[in-house]
Image (tube, rainbow over all chains, first blue to last red; front, side, top):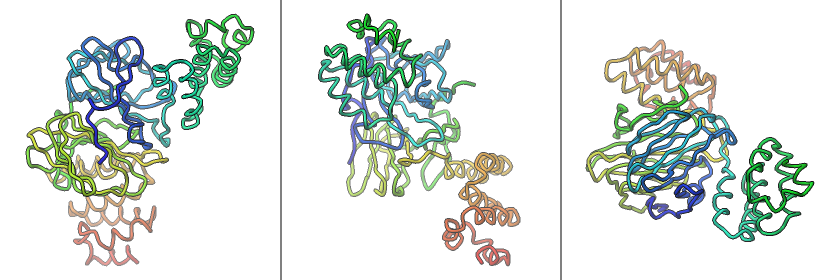
Length: 208
Length: 210
């Protein structure tokens, strides 16, 4: 039987606010919808602050254990276990912080009206835990399994820059900029991962 | 409204195939996947025994209490926080081991967009009919048909519902529409569905299956 307890799921730290990603979709190879769990200690992030602008996903968060404080745009929502927060609008800025020990939140999402495709952020979240060279190899090997997105090329550019491959980094950034120049400029502005290539004329062209 | 916040135990459950369905998808209007919850007290049936078609994937999450899952030939204990993934064409059911056990179910088809639920909308409408709230139940189905005018299943279910409500005229109208939309899919149901027994002696039924 494909069965697992949320505490037995792989734990991948994300960002610097204590978020613990617990991959479910990739664990079971689910291809029909997006789903993951997140856990956090009190005061830590249990839903990363984001919008679904990039993916256009409609989302549902289910507080499975503990208690979370959601912030949806400017509104705070107290969400004890058993609460469902449903966000049909991808533009709503969403985040949540754990208010009790052991808080666990399940997320379900997909773009309405379209066949589900795995989200490429899965790659970036995993690779961010690796050494740069390992991250480059990991992303290069797996990126074909996900729809092509500017963010994936951008992340690859960051990992290559950190791994000491400026030309490769610039290639990836240029590809990202072809797909979404505005986003690349925004991401790159304060991204210290790219400091080693910031003075290159190609960087200024693609992301300056 | 740009978002909805609900507590699972505040949603009124409806009876469905011997289980208590908490109609989450219907209540929220959630569009990405079939998403519902099931509740039961100790010893009660949570997930109706069933097998999903080829291409369907389903995940169950124990939100509170404790359940026993049977998947294929295997049985497993599942305390709150347990996640069970069941691929297509595999038998599954679950029973509650504690009072107030709640299991969330999420399902969809690989490579296909999700198109609202027929069965869960029908379950809500049928509960209203059985509770004597016929007009409300009819309105639930009317809205669902307006959202998906090309759905043979929604038309067919409306036909069953009107049959059970004792309205043969309306039932025939929906069943004819269902047949127009997808004759191949509707035929086996017309032949075997006991919901339609009250219509079988009506001359219009012969016309319908002709």
